[in-house]
Length: 101
Image 1: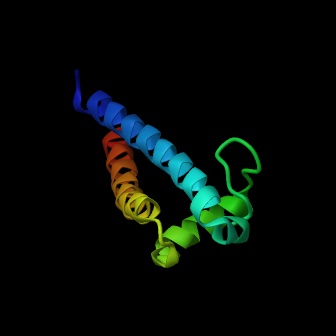
Image 2: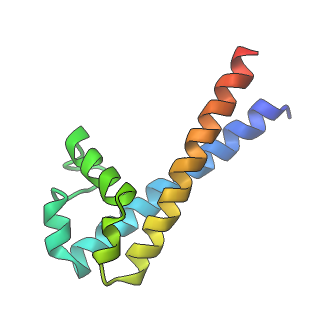
């Protein structure tokens, strides 16, 4: 198996983990922090998923607004997602470099 294939599999696993973590965070926000969940526009991965809601969620993570949530699971998932976002950007840059060279 060549390097590009291995990196592709790693990237896909990262994305699947990020989607699962995001759905868990949405469910926990809905249950334990309903006002924040409402402020984010009632986010969900499959339903009510618009670019505006995705942007709100991304800014919630990037601006570290998750710190106001009392649920430690949501805070932990948010930190995990920050790391995954950075790794995904690095992964995309590496994949583009491998494809172009």
